[in-house]
Image (tube, rainbow, N blue to C red):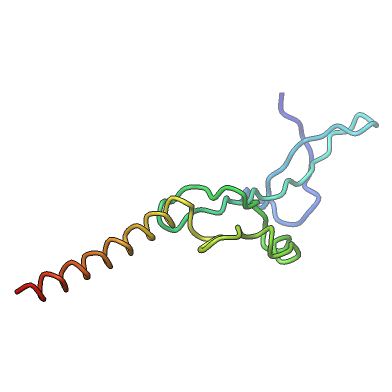
Length: 109
């Protein structure tokens, strides 16, 4: 069953911001309630997966939150996942090892 009601704000086009929910008032009237936009998750820059431990907030609420709740206390805390950081560390270690091996082989010749 479709309820008829008029929009309480200007602009009648169906856009991302104009999401509505119909609620029935105690006086048996149907009124429209505007819903807030859903916020996206914080994702890892390398793995493209959701970062655990960081809340998804809209920009206004994010500025009022403390810095400790917007990031995790480790290297690349708010931007990369733990797996991505681990891979970076291993990769850097292996590159350094390779350089040392090359140097040793050069000295032997």
